[in-house]
Structures are given as C-alpha cells and as structure tokens.
Amino acid sequence: MQSNNDAIFPVRWHVSWWMTCSSAVDAPWLDLQLLHKLLKYKTVNPNVAESALRAFKQHLWYLTGEMIPLALFSSDVPVPERRALADKLMSTGIQPAAPMTRPLQRFGTGFGKPAFPSDISESTTLAELVTPDSWYMMRVLELDTSFLAQDVELWPSTAAYLSSSANVLALNVINDCAERGVKLSSDFLASARSEQHYQNILQVVEQNRKQQPNIRKLKHR
Image (cartoon, rainbow, N blue to C red; front, side, top):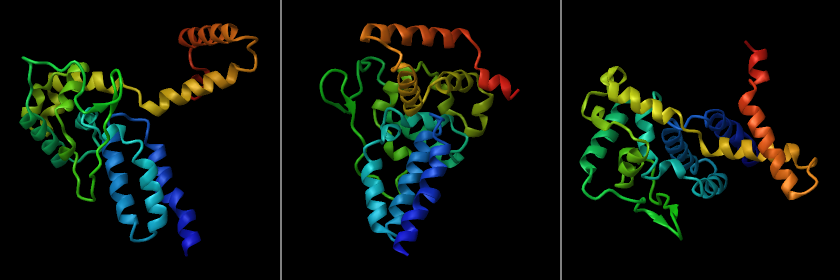
C-alpha cells in the first residue's frame, strides 16, 4: 500500500494544482487549500506528506501578506472567505500619512525577500494571513479599495471593483514568466556564437514575438 500511495500522490494532488496554477488571483486560495490537504494527508502517508510540505513551504509566495489581497478577485474563493478577508483588511487599516516605501515583513539586503508564513494549520483562513504589507501591495497595484465596505455580491457591479480587478488580472504568475524565459533561452542558445550574439538573438526574437500573432492560437480559431 505504501508504494501505491506514493504513485497515487502525484495524480491526486500535484496534477490538479499544476493545471490551475496560471491564475494569480486564484493562487492564494489554491495554495492554502493544498496546504490543508497535505496536512490532512499526513494521516495516510506521513513520509510523502512531510516531504511535499517541506518542499512546498519554500514556495509560499502567494500566502504572504503582500499577495493575499489577490484572493479578493477570485471567483473560486467562497463568499464568506472573501467577506472575512475584506473585513480583516479594513480592520488592519490604512496609513496614508506614512506610506511604506517597502514591505515590512522582508529580510535580506536591498528590497529583500518576503517572509513566508510559518504557522499555517488545517484551519488557517485567508483572513488570518493579512498583514500591514497587504496594503502596500494594494497601493502598488493602484487598487480602488472602496468596494471593500460593500457586500461581496455587489462587487462585480461596482466601478471600484471592476477597475481594481482589471489591474490585478493583468498580473502574470511567477512560474509562467520564468518558464517562458527559460524556454526562450534554451531554444536559441545553440545558435549563439558568443555571449553578445546570444543577447542580440534574444532581443530580436522577443521583439518579433511581440509583433507577430501567436500561430498556435490562430490554428485553433
């Protein structure tokens, strides 16, 4: 049974999250749900669960206080969860008199790296992950947060929510951007004669892709 559980794990847990990882607004909710499920899976296969948790806890970008507000714009998040998230954000407060120049919960040199939450349990909610840094990100994205005081069901019909949603939905998820860059580099690395030539090739290809339509998408129309 142990080996069967090891084989079933990628299918039951990894595949579903991999197929839904392209949405930045869904990422906080999906990541939190995955953590909950992995914590519960410890009763079935503690070795696999602990290994998966140890790896996943190195990638909790969307569960930091900075990124949690993205979940406000996800239709996958239940209404009570979004209401609680909005209430927690409002209770945390805004400090326009002393705007932050950088998030507070970061470490390292320069702009720093975000500090991941370390105490997530099976009952942790999105609202519990809100920090003052949540407001920093909302300012950076220039979100009109006046919709937070309204009922969640009314959000889609308010100008503040619609304009904020447009800003947020324009975000690309981290892995998508990184993997596209890696693919672009690997495709043309062999044809480069020097580092300078390689950089020139990448710039030409990137410019061409911006000017030309996506042929693969045209074939499916």
